[in-house]
Length: 188
View 1 (cartoon, helix red, strand yellow):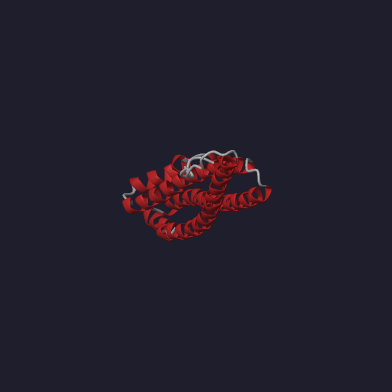
View 2: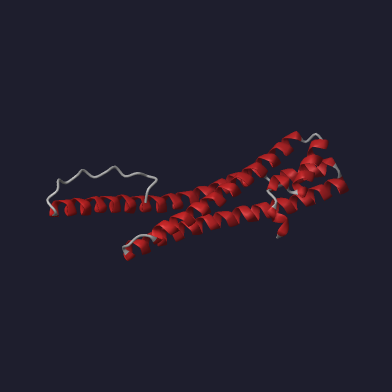
């Protein structure tokens, strides 16, 4: 478990595999491995950032006064966090598999030579792996977008309700009713 704390591009087994590929003039295979490594490293960073944003959203949801709305928003945030966690698990598993495969490929090369290394890299089917990961992320992304859309509708409705309450209060005390202010995306 401790070995997975490296970014994938810094992992010793990945570095060794890339070095062996370069030394054996297997440029195409090296580029495929680098593409997969870069993609997975960037995904890890984005998913960590998304989880931080979800923590902030959960804090904001906790500030809602209406318990029913707060509960529904909390459900949506929890569902979104679940999708993000599911995606993180997919990336973690793919990362662990790639690291162990890299070690096996280098051992295969040492035992059987360059052609065995080429076949081992091709056996990874990196383009197919990237495609499968993209489909999984696309599905999770659509589910998260639906949750975000629902939260956005709730936010807009709460903003309108707040404006109406302010207008009603102003009317009660005999002041002029003001137009509702534009909803600012970075607030509440």
